[in-house]
Length: 82
Image 1 (tube, rainbow, N blue to C red):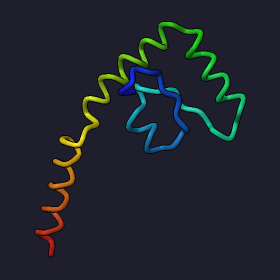
Image 2 (cartoon, rainbow, N blue to C red; image 1 turned 90 degrees about the horizontal axis):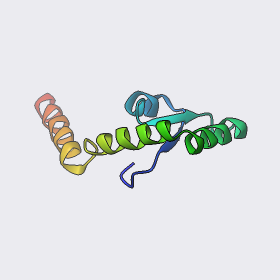
Image 3 (tube, rainbow, N blue to C red; image 1 turned 90 degrees about the vertical axis):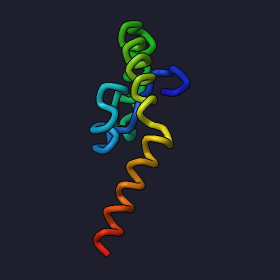
Image 4 (cartoon, rainbow, N blue to C red; image 1 turned 60 degrees about the horizontal axis):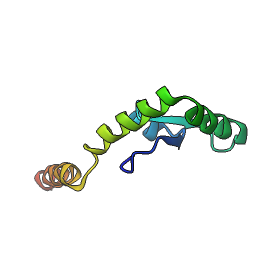
């Protein structure tokens, strides 16, 4: 996503929940499903541009500054429980 590429991800609940608008999801054990997703992204300019644009926006929230804040809040919560 950070490289401005459309993403095809394994259909894992966590990834689907967190990247729903940013990627196409496939069952990685089904080659036909994987190849169909690749072909659809390659052949559909609108889909490709949508995934690229939404991916670039998502990447802005996925950085160490944002994640470190969450981690520090978690540590503080643990500390108050000890």
